[in-house]
Length: 272
Ligand code: ATR
Image (cartoon, rainbow, N blue to C red):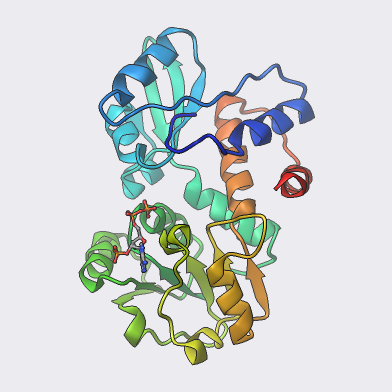
């Protein structure tokens, strides 16, 4: 995998656990590069026989530009987290983040998405990567809430043309966020990385049916703690999404692999 910082990445452990499940001799290692050296590093990796690679922030946009073909969901996200060698030096770029989130919500959090109201906190790359797959679930509405209102509005405008007839899409800032009762609130900002919490009004947060933080850690993230404090009944971290997006990438490289993601999630959780 290519990314920065990746020294604490769980991805090698996750991929090796999947490989052990299906008895495949997979070697998955980390490679730290720079924005200036990214293209050279990826090209060298595939020239040396690499089959596939994952890419993390801040290289997902560059990986999208580098891929010779892109899946529809990668195009929609404008970002690639998985590269697949398809022969003759060609690279397919996909984005498994959104389908990973949807699978995690369904399989590990028992969340219904059809007709559900979704609040996405954040309007950066992490938010953009999951909107398309969420829209495909026929959710009733998506509210993009962000510190910088214009970024939320720009992101909503980007998806306006792809909106199913029954789905509404709104943009707002946290101060004006009104959470529909029972909504699924997704935390897709990097605020937690700086130990900060989002300025969502507590009485609004209390109306959420479920809070899912795309960040994760050994203990509850600051935003998970706030959701618990607000009394949200179901609060989850993003480890399940990490495992599910990895499973989707693994299956791009090994299409016949049938994976038990719950077992790997439990194994990785125990190592945190
Ligand atoms: P990523 O690719 O991880 O999404 P990004 O594109 O830089 O990274 O986006 C970061 C997101 O986290 C943005 O939504 C950002 O809000 P702004 O658009 O207003 O910058 C949000 N974010 C980061 N730090 C934040 C903070 N302290 N409070 C609120 N939002 C924050």
